[in-house]
Image (cartoon, one colour):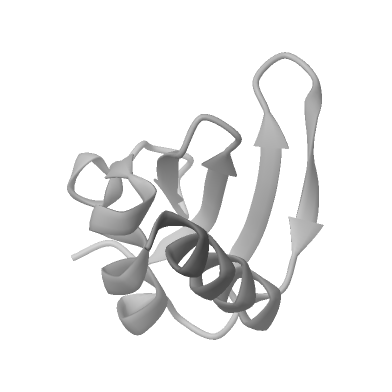
Length: 78
């Protein structure tokens, strides 16, 4: 199975993942709450993480920062 190279989490809650060949990985794409926990568990340590707004750009973020964002988002939802 190809390794995850880059993960993009968008402001609309959608996630996109790409492998080392730049190909989209449909098995890792979807709603943040549904796919990010699995991606975080399975992604190699050198995976690049980004958050952003469509057509406005992205910023790099660490895996730890992404975990915190997910925890805070879950608290807001509950």
